[in-house]
Image 1: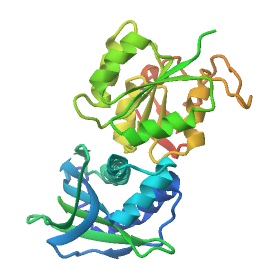
Image 2: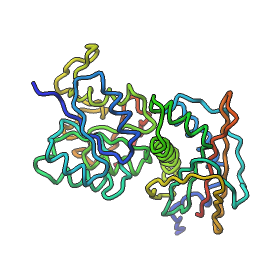
Image 3: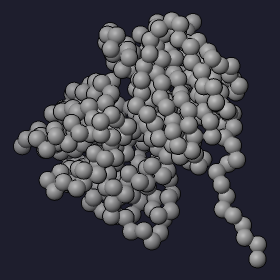
Image 4: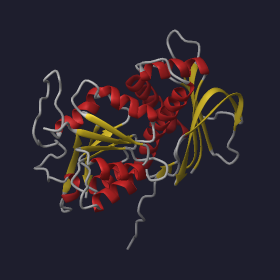
Length: 167
Length: 174
């Protein structure tokens, strides 16, 4: 009798799937919460790292069947506009940090949900936010290094989302 | 009649600000907590009519908080509405079985946020759009819903977990 083993999760989670998820959930989060609709993302399935980040960056770790980290980087002027539109008032520095943290949480939560549905169960860390002009991030052992950049009409700043992960 | 009281348990000040703004036109009292532990303390003191509960929080997360709420004889009947970005089927089902009343997915619209407490009949609006509805069904189920939400679903068949206007409609095998 032939015994057919149960199907494992997909043999790998292609970077293109992650890009597809980001291209769906980032505009959804930005449109729903901020009222700003980014233009389609310019994705890179093999983003080089380390890479530099400028401005306000939210980060959330993934642990479990997929381990990694998600960065959502807002240049300072964009972060201020986003916080002001979200809260409906001139934001304080702390407001900007809070908004970036929560938007990062929403983007990563949606990504996590889709990954879980594909068989890659994982849990999220609490968001952390860093600010600065010369921040370098890397993930030495990451087998997935995806970057997606979202322009906004009439603005020069890009919302940049990076996912470093290992399956 | 006392003013309905809503407790929001979320570590995000942004979410608290949006909730406060969303309900500012309505005749409700808002109280806030920034983690599950603080939420339990405030819930016991304030006895809210409904709790909006995040999942991922420091100190005590939403799952542990919900477990403790449902184990507390005084608080177990308070309707809990989850407010989270996590919508994976397993996660939703796990939380649903713990007896939540509804599930709001982040990102959310102001209307979607307001409708949830209204649907369980807790709030009245100055526009009179909803009025004081009394206790009504939440629309969580495609079949007659138990009073305590998902927690009383039998496990013999397929339950269609439906969250109106919140983007989830998953036929899930139990």
